[in-house]
Image (cartoon, rainbow, N blue to C red; front, side, top):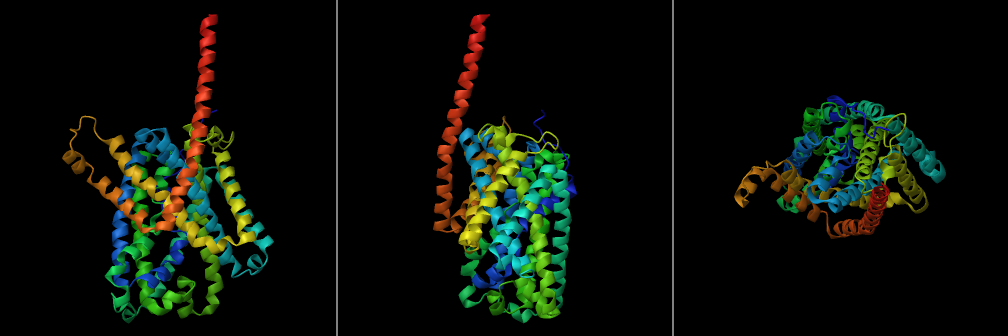
Length: 454
């Protein structure tokens, strides 16, 4: 059976995937989080710093995805540049970070729907069944093919952008520049820029989406790079507009205390009657993000399985739809187990920690990939010297430093748990390596016996 995925994703849909995966549930809480830690001035500066840093990283993924167009390509980048262990660790961190993070998306979807349909949150069993039904519906759509999943995700992403534009218009009409003053308050001035930037950085997770699905993108040599840059550019503009206009539409003290900043700002000017409709709209928009992340999560597991550093079952394609259905089913099963923990022990209380753990899983991959680009795409005839490497790889070095800074800004606890997640992968890698070597030994023995017999 052909072990290659179908190329069914065009430029528009690929761009929508990048935007949809980046602009997930977090954007709806960002105005509040920024108001709590920094002033307007530090927030704007933070967006500029992280926007430039994210674009630097994105160009790395865009270049590699264009030159090495394979779905789940981040595994190939690390493996080809640094060997099997680094390839495994890249797949391990990204896959675990993704399915763990996917859980929070469905919890947030439930919370927004639950504000309108209270039975969903009042009854743990009904809430569990509701989340499970959405999860497996999206899983089935992904099994049917990237084309079906990405097209539905594109429709929801367009809907989400329309929702943001609606908010931007309402906030702009009711903008009060007095709410922005002082730009740098004494207790939340320039000194808060590092912490504020750490918050805005999380909004750019998913910037690698196009390179993750590059094996299924039409004309990847051009469209991976275009969709990545377009997706990040559009997202960054929307992020800055939403943040600044939210700060101008509501006093900082109120914004820092609100539980749903975007909904509350719209309700403040249009009346509380619109809130239930907004909650449904927000829940639907997050569904698009969940759909896209299920796709990305499975592609990394598929690539690792195809390389033999994850169990081969992950690389198995559906006989009819030619999608990595085992990877999709395993990932969704793990998410479903997390749902059960949520409704038994209250996983929603650990939402922020889970998001941070998922994010800290991606950052080492970003750092490693910047250096992998140097090793994989440099000209073989290039003269090797410290100065020539710095000159030709300046962007990569900046991206590497930015990723390391982002890891350090996540805080000691998050870094510790990220390190523990890495260490848990070591025995898994050892098992897979031993199993692969035993398989090779058996194969070689078979060849030797055949040679003797002949």
